Amino acid sequence: MIDTINREIRWQEARITRIVARTKTLSSFFFLPPEPFAHRAGQHVDVRLTAPDGYVALRSYSIASAPNTVPEIELAIDRLDDGEVSPFFHDVAEVGDEIELRGPLGGHFVWSPTNGGPLLLIGGGSGVVPLLAMIRHGFAEKSDARVVLLFSARTAAEAPFLDDLLAIEAEWENFTLRLALTRETPSRPSDYARRIDGPIITDTIKTLGAAPKHVFICGSNAFVNVAADRAVEAGMPAEIIRTERYG
Amino acid sequence: MATRGFTGRPREPEQKDRVPPGQHLVDYFPVLTAGPTPHIATESWKFTLKVGPRPVKTWTWAEFNALPMTKMVRDIHCVTTWSMLDTTWEGVLIDDLLADAFIEPPTKFLLAHSYDGYSTNVPAADLLTGKAMVALKYGGKPLERDHGGPARLLVPHLYFWKSAKWVNGLQFTERDEAGFWELRGYHIYGDPWKEQRYTDD
Image 1 (cartoon, each protein chain N blue to C red):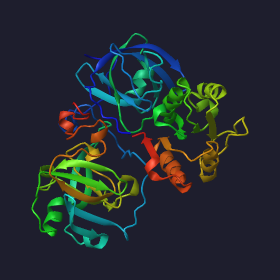
Image 2 (cartoon, each protein chain N blue to C red; image 1 turned 135 degrees about the vertical axis):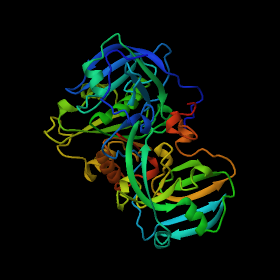
Image 3 (cartoon, rainbow over the protein chains, first blue to last red; image 1 turned 90 degrees about the vertical axis):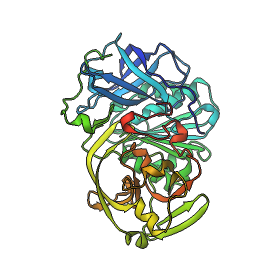
Image 4 (cartoon, helix red, strand yellow; image 1 turned 45 degrees about the horizontal axis):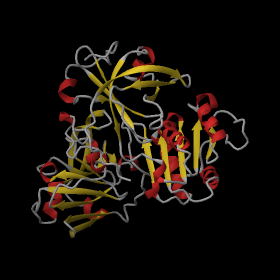
C-alpha cells in the first residue's frame, strides 16, 4: 500500500469558508484551496503561517473530511494553550482569511475502501480525526468492509465528532462504534467506563466477525503505546498495525 | 506573504542560526513511530554490517559495547517541525564500526535497517568522518525503548527520520535506494537547512 507521490505538492492560499466548534477546545476549519486536490483518508496537509518579520511556523494537520465529498478540506484543530499555531486559529483566524497550505501528504497512515477490511480503528481524543476520514470514506462509498472504531475520551462531551459517528453508525450497518470513557459512565451499555485494556480490545475485535486486515491507532504517544501493545497481545501481527502519534 | 494577525512566539535572535526554517523548539522529546514500539532484549540483540547481500560482521550487545564510545552534543530536527538544541548522545561512530570490521566504504550509499522492518537511506559521506553514530545512550542514560532503545542510528544533521530507531544493521548499496519514508513521499536526502521535507522539495 505504498503511495508514491508523483506530482509536486505546491503551496496554495486556501480560504477559510467555515469554522465549526466540535468540543470546547476543538474546532473544524474548512479550507477551499484554489486548486482542489484528491486525498486519501488518513493523509494530512501542512499549514504555513508567516509573521510580518518573515518568521514561519509550520504544522501538519490530519484531514477530517472524506475524499471527494466536498470541495473543501476539513481540518480539526485542537487548541493547545501553550501552542503557537493552534491558538492563532482559535483566537485570530476568521472566515474569509487566506491561509497557506499544501497537500495531500503522507503515504503510510492511509486507507481507501479498495484496501478492504475488516478494519480496527483505535483513537484517543483528537486522534480520532484521521480515523473519522476513513469512516466517512467507507460510509460514503457504502464499503462492504466491516469497520469498528474504539474511541477513548475523558467524557462524551470531550469526544470530538461523537454526534457524527453516532449518526453514521445508525445508517451504516458495517460500522460499529465503541466508546471508552475514562471520567464518566457512558449511556450505552455496549460502551466502556475505563481506559482501554486487553479485554476491551478483544471484545471490540469480536464485533468484526473476523480478524482485522488493517489496524490503525492514533492519539498521544502514551495512548498509542498502550493500545498497540494490547492489540499485539490480542494476536494482531505488528505488520498490520499502523500508528500515528502526536509529536 | 504575511498571514493576517500572526506574530508567532517571541524568539531569540541567536535561534536563527540554530533553528532551520519552518522548525520550532520544543522542551520535551516527542515520539513519532509508524507502528507498534518493539521490545528488544539486549541478550538477543545483534547488529550486522553488510555489503550488498553479504554480511561482513555481526556484533552482539556485549561486543558492540566493547567498541570505542564517543559522546556527541547536537541539535536535532524532526520533519514534523520540532527541533531540540544541545541533545547529548553516546555511542559508536560509524567510522569505528567500519574500522572494527576492517573495511573501507565499498560504495557511496547505505541503508539502515531496524528490528521493526523500518529502513532509511543515507549517503556514506553523511555517516563517516565523525558525523554519525549508533547511539546507545541519550542524556547519559541507556536509550529508552520509545526513542529507539537499545540502539538507534544518529545522523543529527539530517531530518530525524534518518536516525533510524531500533537499528540492527547497516548495508552498503550500489545505488541510493529509497527507504521506508522515502518511498512514502518524503525526501531522498532530508537536509533541514534546505527544508527537504517531501519528495520534490
